[in-house]
Image (cartoon, rainbow, N blue to C red):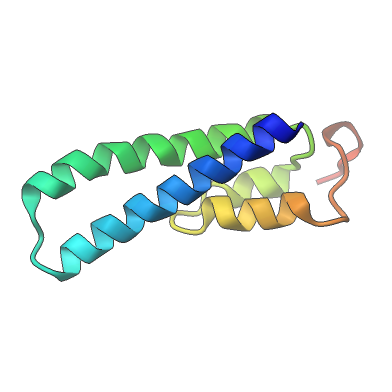
Length: 94
C-alpha cells in the first residue's frame, strides 16, 4: 500500500524533526513556550507512527514492538518493513 507507506514516512520524518527541535531547545536554553508548543505535536506524531506501523499489512509483532522504542521507533520499523525478508501479517510467525 504505497499511500500508507508514504504517510508512515511523513509521520516518521516529522516526529524526528520535532524530537530534534525539543532536544535542541533543551540544549540551548530550555524555552518553555517552545517546549509547550512542540511537545504535544511530537507526542501526537509518535502515536501516529506507532499506530501506522501496527496497522501496516506487512507488520509483525517484532516490528510493532520496535515501533514503541522512543526516538528510533519509526526509522527502525521502516527499515524492517522495507527489508526483503518481511512476510505479510498473515504469514508472520513473530
